[in-house]
Image (cartoon, rainbow, N blue to C red; front, side, top):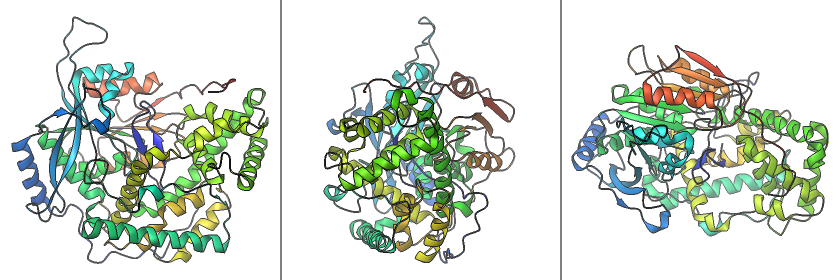
Length: 538
């Protein structure tokens, strides 16, 4: 599923998220064709070795970051070349832009103690399509200072993203639509409109990228990560992935287990090949319905503050009243039902949004639309970045695996699902439907798994009510990566919990990265406190 959200610890770090497994009780989905002739998982290992050796010899020359990246001088940037096609390692090369803040060596609790360097910690925020260039700034936050003392904090734009051979599928100026509907039970005519849009979008990707389009996929993202490791001079990789970053991180662990030192999977995606990616989105839509109910119950508990209803059902009625009013007259000429739904979808990722979204809805229904316009209106200045992120998301997901090519399959499965999970189901469909008409060859998904002793212990972090990466995905990741340890935040739904407000979670993260200590197999942390209601305007 598509969704742009903010990685909870740093507002500047884009975390476009992904999807996870099908809902329990839903029937298996026939109609997904095989992928005859698709490349085998892990193909072209010689190409990776050649590219990695070349990168290790050259290294990365770090210097001032480009002005357009708006990064402070403490962050240094450089590039590393990777093959567009690993089957042709001496062919066309593309450059990945990398950012770094070197380990400070400063112990935040003891200024006289010099902390020894443990290596580079490479981060990917997910997506696919998220930029990690701002990640090194996270070392400024109190929760990350100990890690920033011991590690060079390294972020990068994966292939296709930002300044790394950017991918585009349409003109950015046409990316943001005007106020638009968001029907939970769309008519046949509306479905036909969206099918036409999906076909046009898929054609646009092919026309703009040409033959290169097929090379934007998770397998190449994992290969690029090994080249980056080599370019950084690291014999073994320290990696932290969030959301989709956990998936291709797990692909990396499967392909290059001996190259791993430490790995953190935060908000783990279900890596089962049978669920990549169509079936994942079904379960994600179901999970968002549950999290939407959590949010409504929280609003109801604070009815004296927001006046939206003292039960979840009454809050839903207030939300639907806003949808109807926006359909009749968009707020500020910018915010229609689809924009409202998108803004409230973000609240499904992070409960930090809850007070602000509730305040905006309350103000709007009382006659003041300004907060709603500010929170839900399109940020036109970010159109190019948003279009690029969406293009990479689409290309990677469509290239990674077979998808149903018969609209009847999509229509049947999601009509059924929307009866019990109307909040996000159809919006999820429209985001992924270009994959039904994708022109590039599909791959067979990697069978993510490692045997006993193949991989050093890895740390999986998961919130029990995470909607973007439902908890079953973390359990599956745990089963497939032998020797992994799962830390669960109970009764919480934040998507990405590392370095957040939960001291118990952060304690396990620090113990792993700084002291090589982990629980035996599983551990649980009590959920963090719910946000406080905001009685005044933001």
